[in-house]
Length: 294
Image (cartoon, rainbow, N blue to C red; front, side, top):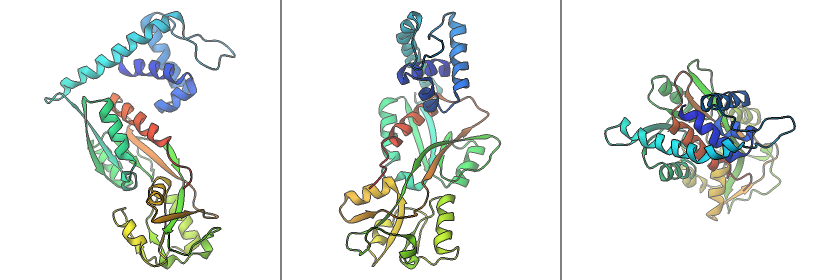
């Protein structure tokens, strides 16, 4: 009996659905069923009722009695992780792209550390390529990226999609409906949001477009948007935070860029750490609250 078998069972119970549990655990449904069967074989009992036409999970009497024991087992497992380091806390090393630092990852870390006080975090900001290299060198345990690539020893999993929005100063004269061909690229505050965005940008403005400002991080965005007629395309979470201040406005863009996809990367050839699963669950709970409009 190992952590992932117990955690799989509890996730199925809380999700009340095999498909939802598989999504939360980032595994296929056959892999999920394999874990459940492995646990049942070890316990010597069936934990869930199986049969045609059963959509939502139904626990057997043994399954119902096993829930409190499974929760105790999981709690004890986390407690035993304290001995892995001399200070009594396990370390999870996470890399993040700069754009998720703006009002997103802070909430994830806060929730994770509040729930799992016996773990500590080391956070670093890396571009996608650098995150892959850090993973290969075993410098990080989990990474969040926007530009996926093939890596033999690394598992890349899509986590969520985020819409991109046009933003500008409240005093700027841009009004809806707004089309890309009505925009002057020389007024753009340009940040490359991923390969899909780059293709869209090249289509409308050309690969040699001369933007007002080009940057690779978010530190100066607000200051740059004060420039006359300045505009930018930013992810939904960032756009929503800007609009909330009352200084900026978001305008729907016809034929705008496709949503960007955030991916997680983790080692393919190593046994998954429980902290990685726990952090990903906190991450996805935050992602579910992502605004769809501004």
